[in-house]
Length: 365
Ligand code: SF4
Image 1 (cartoon, rainbow, N blue to C red):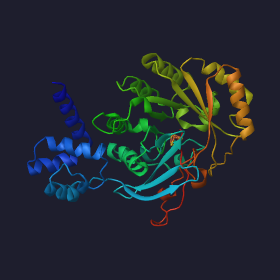
Image 2: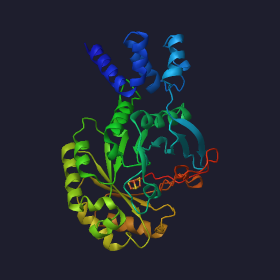
Image 3: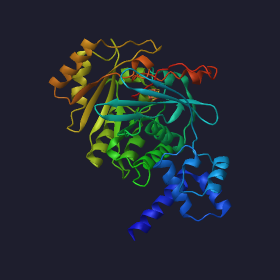
């Protein structure tokens, strides 16, 4: 009975994730179980060419390669930083560039993925925000970024996925969640939900919806300042949702899930790194499940500059002294411009193809 339930669940997920494969199978009159085999080959064996899917008959593999290719993203280039960080440049079938970063740290391998081509949120310190939005990525394009990174680092395994690359994932909610469910699916990629985190600039309705999802995914909210007027300056989304509204949604999330909630805070020199900011944060984030993630700004051409290392450490020290649970995240992959900062995506600005150069990427909202 359990096997039948699991079989049905896998078939349903496969129908949503690879509808074009299902169409080909139906046209050929293939038995239903072939869909599950194709799904397992893509999400478990991580095939990028149906010829690698040896559980499928040869004729079917050939047809699938022609009519529903296993890879939907074209991996154009990979960079490797001296600290082990890797960055992948992909092109979508309609010619858009997106990037993905893999960060090795203390035996873990975290993959940071994108959910949109560009981003409409317009955060002032983020180069992606300056580009505007081209389109949403679909679930397959989102999940495939992880599959490629996983193949690349094998036999090591991907231990964490963070949805902190290009785009506001909650504006592409259904496709993003569809991808995360496949990544979490024991019959798919099989990564535990607690190893998957999504970051949002603060769309309160979606934060509540996310809290109601059955999976135990983690959530991070980009705060960047505890003051309303400053937040409106830095993040246009703040005009839509005030900080009290945001904190109400945050409270809903922790009450509903009993999970730790992360607040992302990029330290910008002279803008949001003063003692008064720490003091206001200590009041705002006074909850045992709240955690403040500090990050020094990585330079991009947005007019901001980074808080010095010394001042950042002092900010952290004062935050802890005032009782906040807080950490200062190190920057990674700076020599290939893959550090937490801004996804400049020069390719999105129409740089001629074949001239790929390192670009900077946002690893945090
Ligand atoms: S910080 Fe995140 S939400 Fe804001 S513009 Fe950049 S990618 Fe979009």
